[in-house]
Length: 55
Image (cartoon, rainbow, N blue to C red):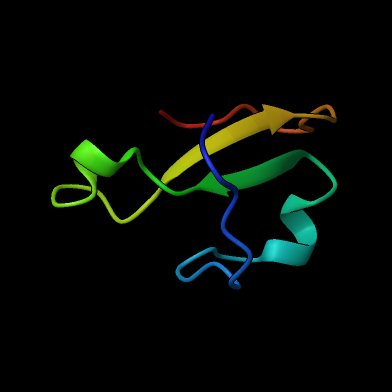
């Protein structure tokens, strides 16, 4: 199982506003992928968006 990262995330825009809509979790990569990845994210939508997301 991946270990969660505890450091504050970098590059998240408007983190306080985002907490109303989603939860972000970061995890260390498996040992064999650490050369390629610093971490990976899991995003869980928790609220309703008032405007559609542009993708």
